[in-house]
Structure formats: C-alpha cells, structure tokens
Image (cartoon, rainbow, N blue to C red; front, side, top):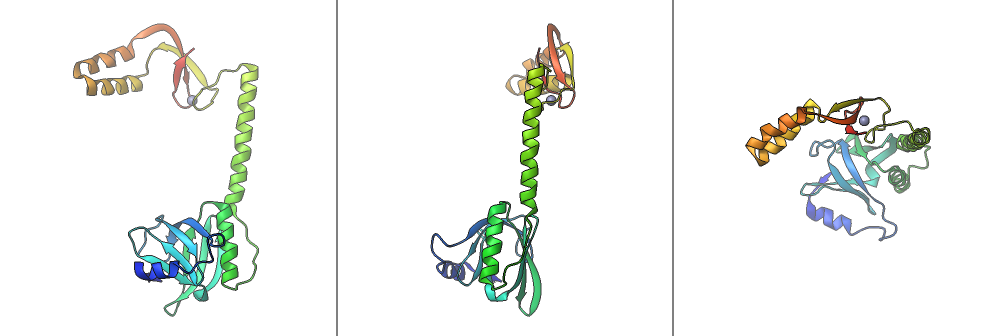
Length: 213
Ligand SMILES: [Zn+2]
C-alpha cells in the first residue's frame, strides 16, 4: 500500500539491524499507478514488511502477512499480494542478480512461504557476456599475432583505405564545430575536409572510423 513519509519513517526504524537488514536498489515495474515504470527506488526488508523508498514521492509498504507468493522471472521479483480485498501482482526489477537472489530468499523466509527452486536468467546472461568477452579477447590476440589490421574502435577487420583526409560526414562536423568558433573559418573547415593528401588512411567499413596507416 501507499504510505506517507511519516509512517514510512516510523516503519523504517524497525529493521533487523545494520548487518541483517536486506536492502537493494530496485526499479518499479508494475502494480501501483502512483509510480512510473522504470522509476528507481530503495527497497528494504524491515521487520513488518517490504519498504519502498521513492525520493520526493509517496512510499510503498507491503506487509509480509499480505504477501501470498514471491517468484523470480528474469531480473524481476514478482509479489502476489492481497491488498484491499484484492489479489494483485506487484513487480520490481533488481538488476544485480546476487542481490535479487538474496531479496527473494529472505522475503520467502519472512513471509513463511517455504523454499521454492528458482532460476535467475540474469545470471545466465552474465555468464554468456563473460564468455563472449573472453572469445573477443582471444580473437584480437590472434589478429595481433597474425599481424592482421583491425579497427581500433570496433575491432572489425573489414577495412578499406583512402587518401581523403576527412569523410564528407566528418568534414561537415568539422565545419559545424569551427563555425561556432569562427563563422568564416567554418567554411574553410569544410573545404579542408574534402582536400586530399599524400597520406593513406584506413577506413573501417563497419563503424566508419578513420585513421592514419
Ligand atoms: Zn570500426
């Protein structure tokens, strides 16, 4: 339910102590029309229930007695609650998977719901990310070893080369920047951009990055 700041401050005092109170940075997802989807807040599990602290806004309090089920789906924590004679879903998002796990387990315990197996998708995603990063590192290491040129920005090996100093897009950008400083130089900047030079430049065909050979 939605509570005011005074009630919130009262409930906030009744924690399990500094070391045993579970707290998390969360995002509001679904369930109360007072809050926007994605709005961030601080979630704390106090003695009587779940407290949600939104800055400069009303606060949330959900008594453990009203929570009928708690589950995890991806990064989301789903509470089935019975409030004002209605059964409804309240959904929060907790991005850090270890904290989500902790909130889930402690919450089930406080609500006397018993243990229920769960899977955290976010954790799996994290593992995939780590292995992809490793693969990419290995690929770059091999490129260096084989002396294959690659884009320093996006690491693509799809390169071409040119003797044009600046691409049309960059010349326009340069001119626009210069024209802020000096309107006359701005025009000159555009011209310089199109001038060819003896130097060769590599151009990445993937991201457009250009650098001296
Ligand atoms: Zn690139």
